[in-house]
Length: 385
Picture (tube, rainbow, N blue to C red):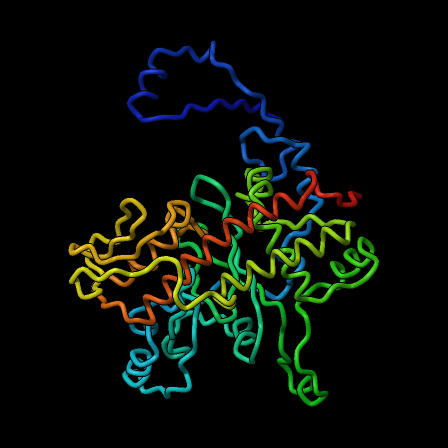
């Protein structure tokens, strides 16, 4: 097999050009890439000890086997609207009934309404999305690959169907959707009275029972997984492996740790669904300076703890910089939600929702720290075979 060597140079292009012109390829400090040990033949150096450790975890698609990528409409402007009334107008335009209108997670914390019908939606993914239309359910959102540089954060949660760019619109990061429960799809199942069943593989349940000595509820498994994926150490420790495939879940034999992470994950899930008891009068009051609560082009802007939405400087006060900079997937949440409402007047409900987002993200930052503090060491005390 051919030998592969690797070297890297970071910085602005002008500075890199100067270094390259002055360098001698024969004197460059090359790293030897072991292709036989590299699972994905990435042609870059990797920590193979960590690779072995990471691979002992369960790929999320092996835990939740029924899954698909998100909906692609082919014409968002003709099928998806910010409010239900506008969506009903779109349905009428397409000679479809109001019953085709469904809530959809369009972007983080941004539930919109879609005319969900095969006549107007190019790829409806109905074989999987149908499981979110039958009542209370949860679904994990993730991506198979990471294309943007920086920390991995390609994880979200939903209780509705999703659009394919709900947590990222970057190249290669089309969003995948993994429901917790699946509903009967055949007449035989319906006649047998089956209502729904967990979308969790039998092999994973067997392994988890071996580790813990009992079978957790589907919700407990979901919450544990969500907590793991929000551990800053998990994201940094396995960063190079998270780029190339669906994330993996390391298992623990420590029942107390499983419960503790599950509780923290449940809090995160509720925050990201805006289900937690967030006060109506949140900690970031909105100040109207005469701009009519309209989001101007080129906004929002962040200045000294204030999120400004227009030239008259209407905006939200006391927004921590860490919250303003918080990313979920490929989006800077506090910026994206307002930018997508350019030219619109924020209603009292919009203002209240944004304030809840600020609170949810602030509490998420705290919970992510608590998740790391709860894990005594890495690797998690998984049983490696």
